[in-house]
Length: 350
Image 1: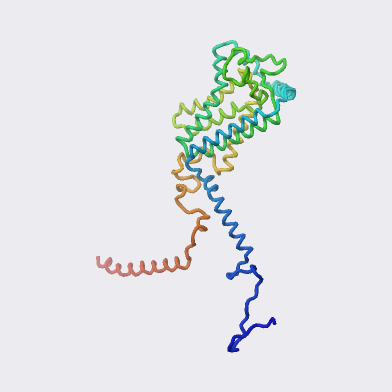
Image 2 (image 1 turned 30 degrees about the vertical axis):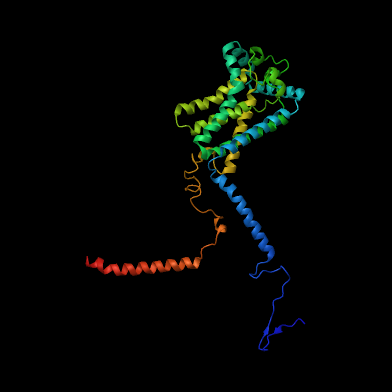
């Protein structure tokens, strides 16, 4: 009992390996290590497509993008309008912002509002601009990126989504009354005065929209995103100039219509900057540094996506034998040397 068994001829003792069930595999690897290795390989295989997307997003799928944008805007509208309308707090915050701008010497909103309201055709056009153009331009730039800049689309769309998500936190934690709704602010509600249709800022549409979601201004956040995207990627110079003017005109419109303070615009621009920076951190480069199409070489690898193996590709199949490669190389070298030796006399005779 406990002694090694002998073979039938009684020549030498033969020890039988005794191991607990499931403790050691025949190749010397414990079952625990094997399970961990399999889990690690499975995790790497699942992570590899996502990592590849961040390195080179590839061509977007239209059905997925339409679904994603539709769901995202529905969530944005639902969250924005679900924030309780804390009127008293929103008006106090508006007074605080107004006093801050007076201290900084930039409280020009009321003068601009009254001056432009005196020109009926101009302020009416600005009201329609405020009600419609930020949707049209933002969707238009997304479509333009999708059709002509597919390699940059995913990173650009991600930055826009982050910009909008940050704004939702501002709407919830810092409700702000726009200048036109300030008590004793002496601002003119130009939409109500000139009966502009289609705006959710006043009239019947105001009942289904949160009127105190003014900080930050997504009119500025989205227009700045559109302007920078076109300015960096468009080829014609006049198009780039118009793109940079777009957020500046939007700033004039939101102030003249008394829908935002200057500080709302500053916060909206900060959201856009945070969105672009987030895309840079996630994708490893700025939106505008991606190749125009997914087939072009990337700036990180210098090769087209999918043209070469990735660090994890070796797990998909057997690894080459290093000794075999070295033997093949040595055989090739010897063949090359012998060939050169045979050709040398001929070269000398010439």
